[in-house]
Amino acid sequence: MTELSVSILSADLANLAAETADSMVCGADMVHFDVMDGHFVPNITYGAPVLKCLKKAVPEAFYDVHLMISDPARYAQDFAAAGANLINFHIEAVPNHVGQTIAAVRETGCLVGLTISPSTPPQAVFPYLDELDLVLVMGVEPGFGGQKFIPTTVSRVAAIKAECNRRGVSPRIEVDGGINTETASLCAQAGASVLVMGSAFFKAQDRAALAKQVRAL
Image 1: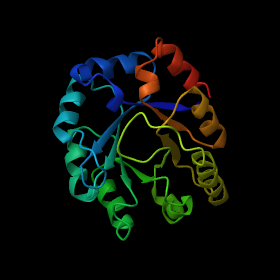
Image 2: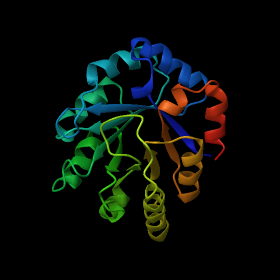
Image 3: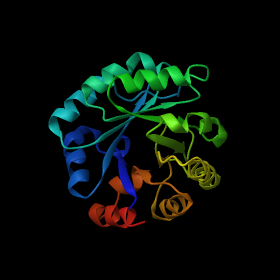
Image 4: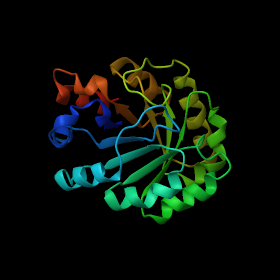
């Protein structure tokens, strides 16, 4: 079964708690919480106080927090305290401090995810596969929702999955960006076990049917 993580960046932000709760009712497995700082990526979203409020309003959700920020270790504890269950950070943000940042996230009690942008070769995450709960492969350039899926994402997922199999490790492989019913199927076939869906999910006429379709991949 494939897990569905819904990106609330594409939700109605004026009704964020209701949208989040509805996604859980419709069958989502996780809530993908995108944090952008205007420095690592050219956009600003929301921070730990918003997550804290959302966690209080929808405590049953699993919060998959994606830190698109320049200093993830500095803020990991804040997001953990606010309600994060899993914290993803970008390898490009801390190229010389990946191991230390993994340890910093692990110390918070959260699961640890390592993210790679489209320009980063999949082999960059190979040294850390033993230490990770999840690898996030971006299907678009990080920073904005609603972008078109980059086709080479599929082969990048397959490369990471093959290396995991070779080494006998099993972190989840997640894909974020440009996921719809077509690209979801391609990524799942390549080895992805978690799919982040934003625009396609929140604009769907029947969210429950879509969630069921994705989770059956």
